[in-house]
Image (cartoon, rainbow, N blue to C red; front, side, top):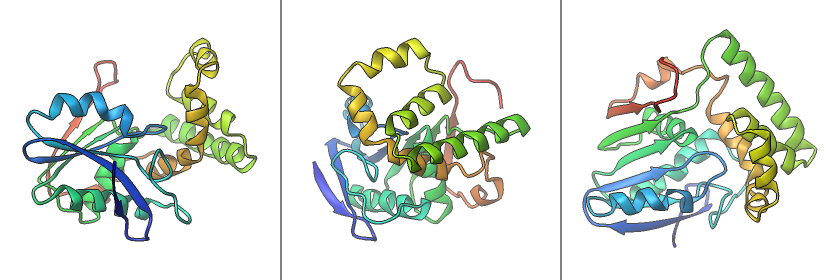
Length: 216
């Protein structure tokens, strides 16, 4: 993997493949660029695809205290490495990051986001607040396993599936990234869609929902 320095000096690892207009993929929570590899391979015949390890994951560094602004700078660095006319596709919390970056002034050709996990509405905001509080209690206590379990439960993973996952080498990989769940949580704020802030997004944007998602 290649590396580029973010604005605060944090090394961000990325991989480039394919040929065509530049396209940066932004992954979601508890994932590295390896999770995006199958999609990157499908897109590579038509695009120069860049996948990267978000801060604190995989081969990327994690200098100092993370914030939304730092992750925006990381994405900006990768887009800069991609070259002029780059587009961005963000998945889940990576979609929220992509929206925040473009709203903050990152210039992209096209923007697409898949299911940024906002939870608007009274019940959704209450759910988000409770999960945020519990996540920080677990991380403050050093309970990485508990933080991973919380995330899996929040995303609808059955207890039986989580139990099977715990018995695999993948569990240790998830625990190693558990602290970055706080970064994803911060990207989503209180869970509501920041409509006023996102009004600054000038790029042509496609928002995609999965087939089992409830209608907005």
